[in-house]
Image (cartoon, rainbow, N blue to C red):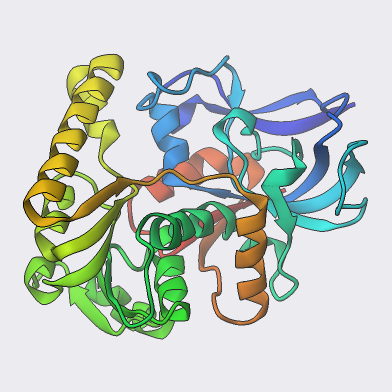
Length: 334
């Protein structure tokens, strides 16, 4: 039996993505779920992988099916899986080793899956996993954000930012965020207490002395975040700008140079001001994802979707996301 999948045939621009007919996964492992994909979200990491920014870290056997966000229906359960049954609606953000959500069907580890939130449809459910887990790992895991603390969340209208604002408010924090004027009303509705227009205001001044910064812009924003946070505060970086380093120095040397740069920043911040700088990578954790799913059902957080595209128009969806103008997530439908 065959299925439709969008595969990356080379490294480069969105034109390397092609709609292919390929065999369906013939068998599944004892700890896996076979999932009929209803919706799959696109993330910036997808086009960064497509461009080759992470080739020193992630080796792909091309052609390769991208996609690390899915909402779908279980059609087969591995022999050692407990807690899931055929017909269950589930969500997942699989690890880099098990990408493949740009397809009509995907096989994933059951422990990387969670029940789909019943309060939203598959499109909005697919917009939750990767950004939700990233926000959770940054604010809860790395930064240990506490009630009453002040947090600066960069790019509040983006995929991670929109969830992070809501999660921070649920945790009882006072939220500062940056955005363009057109998104000020949106981030306020999401729960931001202080909206910073990045075009006319300096967040280093407005949010100076905050307890936590969720840094998501890369480039010089990493050093700016360290200047913004209070002595003894925490900075969680999710987009340190690896793409720029690999463009400048090559796929291997770029990673090595970035690692040295980040280590110098982290050690300097800790020794001089007691600031803890963490590089956050999302963990494909079904338990944490189940917690986020419950928060959606409780009305504490709501996934934000900007646009949807049919699976056949994945290349165009990539092009749109790369403009940097998306408010929330871009989602593919099968």
